[in-house]
Length: 278
Ligand code: FAD
Image 1 (cartoon, rainbow, N blue to C red):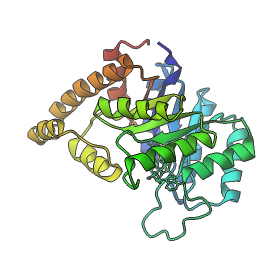
Image 2: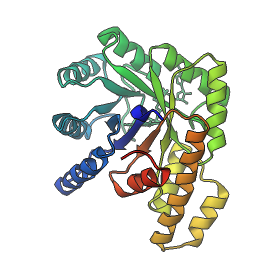
Image 3: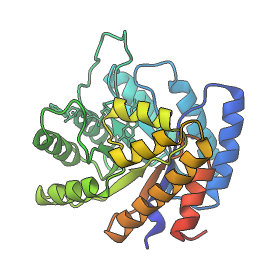
Image 4: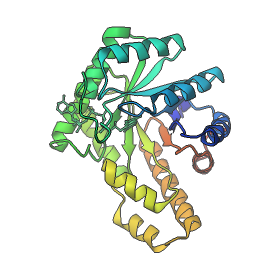
């Protein structure tokens, strides 16, 4: 199996304690030798410096960082400066996104959709960056129709993206169906499933409502039934998510991208159960 496409995602912590904890998490996950660690980037401002700090720490420790870069609310000049900064830091992979405007932020800025960002990165930096984009097997909540969403995805790939990472999902068929439809549109690039370990039901339900990822009824009901018993939710989550990963890899998925929520243990446990090399 090609280990090159296994990766872990972090968000920039808000406190010094969170940063310390993330350093420990990263050290543990680094032992699994992932292709890269990606770091999220809040559209529209305040947290962006924290993304740069974490990205720099990852690079300084000798690992590959893949910063996320969201364009909504930004300008060409600002994005150009960030790209130059990343080039100087030795970054060679970027996750290019539209992002979501924070509430209260009025100006959409100079980019409307991620395909415009991908074109801009290619125009400014040629082939320097490997560009990842987002894919939505259960469709983006703002898409006019599934067909439109797939055509918009194709637009991003045609603008120069190299590969994609999906929104998380718990229904493997949604991924396989999406991958098949995308191939019919002539896209052969790797589409790596995004994997969300389950830590707490209420948190997962909130995320899923916001991003349009479905928690199948049987999973939702089972987790609701556990009430405040977090250990049972997590044990159930490990079983379900490991089975999902097994199915995805057996069905030809080119790797896995773990949304770690800055915790090492759930991803490591799934990794072990999958029998992946350590
Ligand atoms: P786009 O590809 O631009 O699509 C957005 C919507 O517009 C879709 O409904 C699409 O169908 C439609 N659309 C696209 N192009 C066009 C067009 N030309 N004309 C008309 N309609 C169009 N958010 C963050 O803020 N920071 C992060 O770090 C971050 N990381 C993420 C990582 C991954 C792997 C994923 C899956 C999501 C991430 N997000 C992040 C969330 C993401 O920013 C949101 O889902 C956002 O709403 C859409 O971003 P996008 O890049 O997919 O947008």
